[in-house]
Amino acid sequence: MPMFPERDGWHWLSLEGASPIPVEWNADHAPVAFDDWGWALGDYDDDLHSPEKAAKSMCYHGPCLTPTQIAEMLAAERERCAKVCEERRLPDFSMPEQWYNNGCDHCSNAIRNLGAAP
Image (cartoon, rainbow, N blue to C red; front, side, top):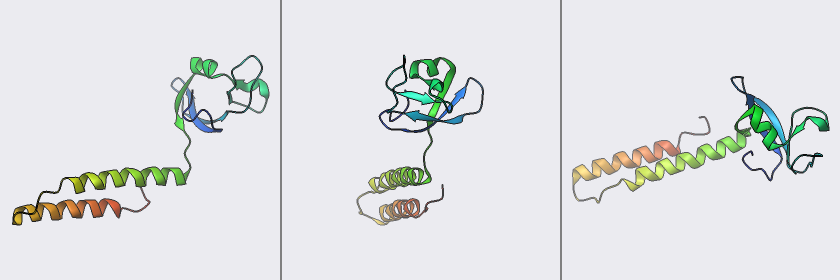
């Protein structure tokens, strides 16, 4: 069963030991003698495979994400990392703590300013 099985989309599948290929997941198609969902592995309805049939012969690697989805995930991960830096701050009692906190601030700002490039 793929991630987001309720949505149509492309996912990376492979035969054992082979390179992954993009395969379409069709959530609305109900092939005869299979489940309500199916993998479209060709141009014909008889090329639709149930999740159970595909699991016996193929390895699932994950969804094929769009550049926008990748950028959103990357931005969210960077924000989580920046917040960790901010949470490491110490109370400002003396100069060493201020230096340490400046380092935390510098790290969180640097992470947030990495831009869209991975």
